Image (cartoon, rainbow, N blue to C red; front, top):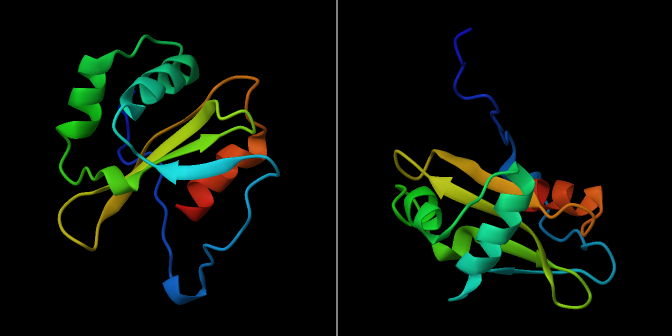
Length: 122
């Protein structure tokens, strides 16, 4: 069986109608990458993909990708400040093309609605 790429395509036909004002689930917060968050990313993605991700994979899968920008790597934290979800938006081929890269949540730590919000609003 041949893998079809892309497997997921997101199209926003009317960007001016898209709202970024939706609140997160009560008690959760969101922010973009800060130095040191690569450890959070490795933990979240390892638990999400059931595969060990170490800093070398962060380097290869994030930093070395065309279109990487720390302002486009998002983390959600629970009420205790524990990182529980991540998603990144990458650009490729110029300003008109981008994709969501490595969306993950830690099992049991984030309600499904938080994962949906990561994809929907960022």
